Length: 387
Image: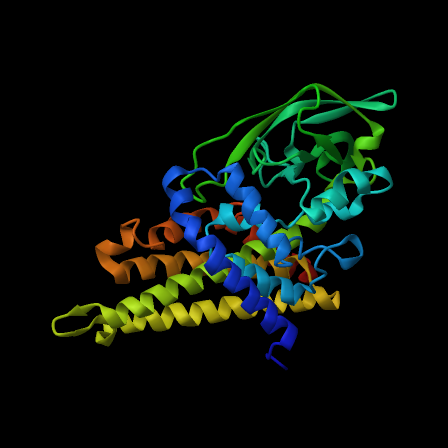
């Protein structure tokens, strides 16, 4: 088994890390202090990311993207994950892979402009009564001739305030199943400003300042059949494909933040002197560092394994669940221990640790909670045995 990186992978890691350190780090304090990513700053950094060849790296070359294989993409996401989330996610765009399902005029209107950085998407699935339970969504799209009439509310919709259009998942039909009626869903592409579609301010969030969530309200919103992305009633299949990629993306970003926290903790353990010696010489600190390093290494290997399996076409939902579960829970542990090693200074906003510690909390919730990941893993273990 070869764990070495190719020259291309090493170049991408170096280039991405340099961009993060030189272009994103300097703006972290502003975004953290104000809770706002200014539109002017967003556009400036987006142009720099495009010029550096880092924009839309997750998309295939045939549509103008970077065409990274999954392992290389994970390495790239790890480096981006070191920075404030709003800065790296909004400014170094990675359009949703769902857009690859665009056909005909949709490609020119949504897919290609998103890859070029001219338009930005957001994905709307979660609802006040339907988070992990997508089948429980109440937003409906009812046929009216050749059109659909959409009614319902979505919430926790990330960066909808910066987006130009929404990728909406709504219930369009139902079918019988062993557990009773089950909703079928369809995915739609809807421009911001379309009649009957409102974007409202969301909730204040302790994690990822500057990266806002919004509430989307659809009231008798009429869209034509041309707005359907993929096939009618097949939206659940499209969503599941997307969730696999985003769970790896979350996991990879956690690796970068954990590595930054560990680096800070190591340096502090050398520089901070108590009782006549560096605190790193005390077993209470040195053992924490060792445990943090072991957990980070284990999580990184699991994420890279899932990415490698995806490239080989043999990855399962359980592989992605294992990667996300381990990486997100590892980050929580590493961030907390790094803060503990710093003592009171760890909680001060002079250092990025308190931000990393705050931001870590959401990773075990969004894109599938840790409990959902454990459910997926345990189901994969028991189903072959008839359980």
